[in-house]
Each structure stands twice: as C-alpha cells, then as structure tokens.
Image (cartoon, rainbow, N blue to C red; front, top):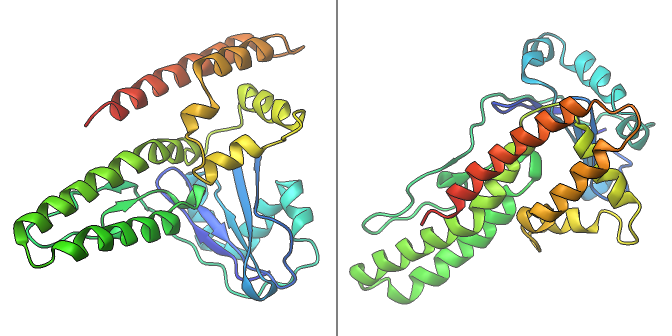
Length: 261
C-alpha cells in the first residue's frame, strides 16, 4: 500500500494510502459515516483516501497507522480491494481545508488553480479544474497582453466563466464532505442504480463533469426516490421524511446561489 496519506477538511478527515500491486478502477465506499476511495496510480500503486468523521482527528494524530487500519476494516469493500498490499509510504494527514471562491482578477493579474478556487478533495475535481481554467486563462489573456484594458476585461470574463462552471460542483462536493451517515434515501439511490443496465454510469458522469448533479437528482427523481424509500419494510419513515425535508431546504439554498450572477 503506498503511503497512508490522511487528510481532513472541516467536515471530516481523509487518508490516502498508495500501495504496490494496486489494480482496478477508481472506486468509493461508504459505511455509516466512513468514506474511503481507492485511486489507481502510476507504477502499480494505489492511492487510498479515507475521510473519517472530524471528531476522530486526535485519534489519527496519536496513532495514525492503527486508526488507518481500523478505519479500512470498517469498509469491507475497501479492505478487500487492498488486501495483500504493502504500505509504500507513510500516512499523511491534514485538517482544516476549507473550500472557497476568491476574487480572481485585478489590474494585470489573475490567480489560477487553488489560488483562486478550492473544493474539498473528496470528489477529486481540483486537478481537472486547475488544468482546464489555467488553459482557458492563457487562451483568454494571450491575444490581449499588450492592451491592459482588454486584458482586464478578458480575465474578468474568465473568472465569471470559472465560477459559473464550478459552482454547482462546489456545492455537490460540500454535501459529500459533511461526513454524515449514509441515509435510507442514499441506500435506495445506490440500489436503484445497481439494478439498471447502465449501473452507476449516471453518477460517474457527474464525477466526469459530463452531467451536472442537478441533472442526476431532478425533482421528479427525488420524489420517486422518496416514495420508494418510504415503502421499504421496517424503514423509519419519520427519519426519512426529516432527511428529505433537510435536503429539500439545502437544495433550495443551492438553487438560489446558482441563480446569482
């Protein structure tokens, strides 16, 4: 296993191990409030990222290897994925990685990458956006470098495009980074995807930015999901309705933000 790298953001913490002999596609597991991801890397290594609840940060500081191994066992799928691997690097951990949009233009300047915008690493979107908007910034600025007025207009337009394209993914990422327990609604969603011929492709398309989160969970889809969940034997209907109400309020707040210019 290549080094447990532990990282935690405000909502939680994460751990990334790489391991020799890693194989298979990138995958994510969630059990209760635990979240783990395995990313295949160069040289036959696998990077494993853990995001346990934030209140366990001190335990990871005191015994990073013990807590890392214990957390992996809480997710049987992840444990099976890395079984037999050898840890190749030390465990790295981090806390307090707040997400943000910063004002990113001024007279003759425009910061690209994390300097201007940062999302929690749980959805692995940072490199994608840094490369994309770094390239777009260069394409916008290069033709007008000799004209300060046009340059400032070009970078302002670039910043607006970045914010517009990233804002919905930013909110979706913040939702995943909350380290909340898996809800009955989420279980129904995952089971329904597993039963479809295309499997989890619609969700993977969100990660790939082929579709927006709002295109996956439309109001109709959410209503259908709620109805199916409420019919499950033994389900706590009051808890399901509370979850649905909380999520509806969150989505209303997000939609309000997305309508901003």
